[in-house]
Amino acid sequence: MRTYDKTDVALPLAPRNEEETTVLLQEALGMAATTGLLMRSAGGSRTDSAHVKPAFCHAPVCLLPNALPVQEYVKARRLATIWNLLVARIAHDGPWLLQTLASVLPHDEFTRRLVEIFQAINGAGRDVQKIQLGITRSDYMLHAGESGSGSPELKQVEINTIAASFGCLSTQVTRLHQYLVQKVLGHSRLSSKSFILPHNETMRGLAHGLAAAHKEYLRQESVMFKPSQPSRPGRRPCVLMLVQADERNINDQKLLEICLWEEFGVLLHRATLLEVARNAHLDLQRRQNLLLVSPLISDTGEEDVQEAEVEVTVAYFRAGYDPSDYSSEGEWKGRELIEMSAAIKCPSISHHLAGTKKVQEALCRPGVLERFLKDAEDVDAIRNCFVGLYGLDPECEGATAAVAAACNSPQHFVLKPQREGGGHNLYDQDLVEALSQMTAEERAAYILMEKIRPPPFEAFFLRDCSVLRGLAVLELGVYGVYLGDGEGKRVILNESVGHLLRTKLASSHEGGVAAGFAVLSSPLLVGGGEDSGILSKKYFSTLREFTMSARVWRRQRFWKIGATGIAFWGVGLFLTYIAVSKRSGKLQ
Image (cartoon, rainbow, N blue to C red):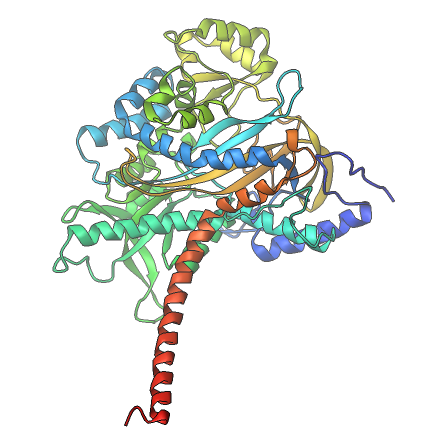
């Protein structure tokens, strides 16, 4: 029997021996299967040339949660609402956005096509929807510095403004870890003086954001059109989720679809960009409403499937962030049709561009954050989460020195293109070769970033039904939901709604779960720095503010149920009064 060392602060929770590891493995596999913590296996099993019979396996996860300093978690959660507003204002500032991306466009066709759509819509005054929904995820890693001394602090890796995924599976991972910690490891409570395993309300928070946008669209329709101008009978309003044709992370999406329906009664329809191009059109008699032909179950109660139109209230992109999502001009046509429509976009094309690496680099320049944020404390909070970022276009001050430093010490840098989804960055000798072969103009399509140095720790990985133990590092993602205009004058929703923790081998450069580099995990909040080893009471109360989506949902439900209860109570009291009065002879 092998025992494990639990003295390391990075392993506050660990199996005591191999037998307990086996029990954790079996319980985790069962829990994953019953809660939808699954991903479609690569390829699936093909039944014929047109259909694929999907096969599923558990999502790659950590067997137990990983330690994270509580003060850093609180800091990242509080930054989410500032990032929400910052991104919305950047997206609204078209001239600055175009100027910032100008040097990228000659050597980045994908970004150029996105910019062309943005210019076509705004230049022709065809942007008929001023409200935008942002579902963002800001990713951070603990940075120990080159010397490794001092308490590690979270530094931003990137901000994701399109297709920020794994929110629903992350909610299920938290459920898994709560179950394992209590049932197998025997901890009766999920909080103590030494650790907190926080709740994760991401799934409900994202659904709440989509439902709020759906409600706002319907409100706009009711204001703009009189009851005598109703929409065509049978046209069902719905959220449209744009997906990839070969999506593996389908459970993460379906869990959100189910939550959106069960909790808020909002219908969600899935389609690819190509299907939008083929089956959608704009209703020009109203305000460019996006209508999509879709097979639906008949409203008459019959089981036959008929073709009907759905009216898209919110276009929610879970695809469209990578050049591979546009294999033909059809996908570009679908994207442009959506952007021209009255649907609330998540994200809009400008919101998408606001998440590019070039924008991230530009925000590090003196005075740029102050252009968008008026509160000095907000500016300092955002700036403190940056590491060194360097523009490489010839006009950028210090570009030549940054290239020389990266070629001389490539282990300290990462070279990033304007891409999302993982697997695109260049490191070490690949970085040197790329910089040496590119012209000064070609380098402008990239940015250089100082490499974050996270402290490694031991972790237990669950992949392909087996447990592996290895040296790991973690990356915390915090989800934000913003609904409002770009100026911040009308803010309907601005919340930090949950978290995602990804753990990967310390030897791995990339961090994407879908790309196969990392596994899903949960943060186990522990004391750090001056609070080392002991969690003070202030953190227990502070963490309550980060169940915003749950609080909103519970408050709505409280008032709905509470109002009904008060009404029944009032009626009952009145009837009791009448009965008592009759008995006492006051009423004849």
